[in-house]
Image 1 (cartoon, rainbow, N blue to C red):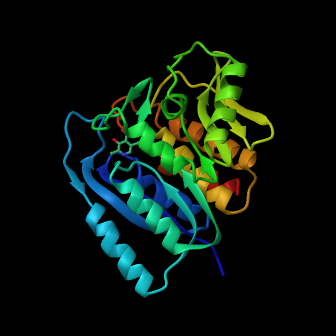
Image 2 (image 1 turned 90 degrees about the vertical axis):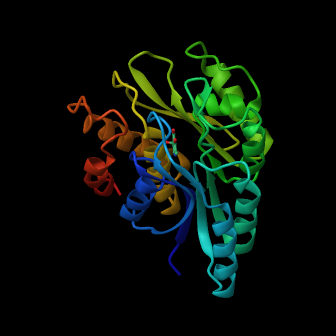
Length: 273
Ligand code: PXL
């Protein structure tokens, strides 16, 4: 039986993030992708304003129907969700997992030392409960600090800090840890990958910009390739390269501030599979 992945996150109708990235990217990796929209927003929360329609009760109805149809999944990938959705997601995973189903949790909640708008101060502790059960978590450095309850170091950290962070996140329960946005040299940016034995790194060139949605593009390419059976490091490396290609495809359009043109990098991604 082929694998079927379920991704649970919001639909931001406009903004090149969450489900509008996950569905095309994971599908392009050749993996059947089912979606469970957790909320619908007019656009993501880096715009000046947005509408938000919470779909938590719909998630419960959908689960009840799936159970009647014996619908099951071989992988789960969660992204931007609310605190109230965490127990619902735990139930969905418990009740629809095939044997050995993979749980990939991107603890989307913060960047650059700050929680995204709308998340309460205690949200990271709740997200930590979901991360405990994961096969792989994909935090950026801000999210990793929030999960661990430690101060955000901005740029002031070294290898020992990152490696302790990976070990501490692993101790919390996640089997594998991929920390994104790691940099020890100013023109290189990459990922630290920890499987409970050793920390490995992959770096790309650092482009002189910060763009929205790169975390979702990374997580989606990672989920698609990891689900294909790639190793943690290989999946994280291609996902990092995919993000670089997506940023490069966006750089010449100065007005395009709200996301990355990951669509233009999909041929690159599929050529590397
Ligand atoms: O890219 C992460 C993300 C996903 N979904 C929504 C967001 C954000 C980041 O701001 O606002 C709604």
